[in-house]
Amino acid sequence: MRAAVAILLSLALAKPAFADITAKYAPPNSAATVRLEIASNGDVRGDLYGKTAKQSSAFIIRNGQYYFLDTGPSGIGVIRAEDMNRLLLEKIDPATRAQEQQADNVLSFPEKGLATVNGRTGAAFDMQVGSGDLLSPESWAVMSSDPTLAPIGAAMVRVFKLSMTNVAMVNGQQTFRNMLSVLKRGSPLSAVLFFGSAQLQSVDFKAIPATEFALPAKPDTFEAARNRLSSEGKL
Image 1 (spheres, rainbow, N blue to C red):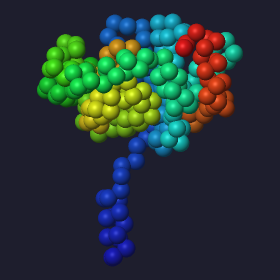
Image 2 (image 1 turned 90 degrees about the vertical axis):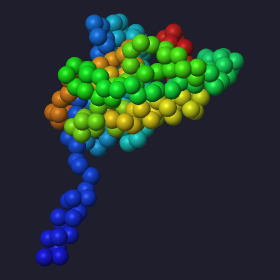
Image 3 (image 1 turned 30 degrees about the horizontal axis):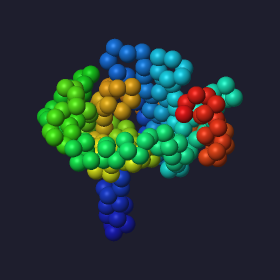
C-alpha cells in the first residue's frame, strides 16, 4: 500500500513530459517565415527564411549551448553565440551604447489587456521608453498561457537568454530584464523579435529527427568566425 501511494505521489509531483514540437511564425503579409523545432530534451533549432538568401539564417541550441549557422560561399560555418555577440558589439560605438543605457532610453513593457492572434488569445504588452511614450501602436508581444504551448515559451526564453546578451550590453541590463520578464509570462503568439512582429501561424507535435539538432561542422574559433563573416560582408 505504501509503495502504491509513493508511486502515485511521485507521478503527481513529476514535471509534465513534453513531446517534440514545431512552431511556425511569420509577420502578416510577408514572405518571411520562422520555423522553431523544439526537441523533448530541450534542444532547439530555428530557421529564419527571409525574402532573400542573405536575409536567411539558422541557429541550434544543443546541450545548453547556442550556435549560429552561417551559410556562405565556403559552406556552412558554426559560430558560438558568445563569439557572434562579441563581434557585433565591436561594431557599436561606445558613445551610442552609453546613450542607449540612459534612464530615458530604458524600455519597459506594460501589460495592456488581452489580444487575439490567429484565433489564440493572450496578454498583450506595449513597448515604451522611460518618458512613457509608446514606440509603436502595435503590441511588442502577445503572450499565451496555454499549457500545450509551454515548450515554445520555454524555448523562446532560452533563445533570448543565450543569443541576446548584446541587448543587455547595448541597451542596458534593465531593458534586457524587462524583455525577459515578458517572455517568461508564457508563449509568444506574436513578438517583435523576428522580421518585425512575427505571429504564431501553426503548431505541430510530430517527432523531429535527431539529425535536425546536429551541428553541421566544428565550431569556428573567434578569429575564424571574424574572418568568415568579414569575407562574406556580414560585419
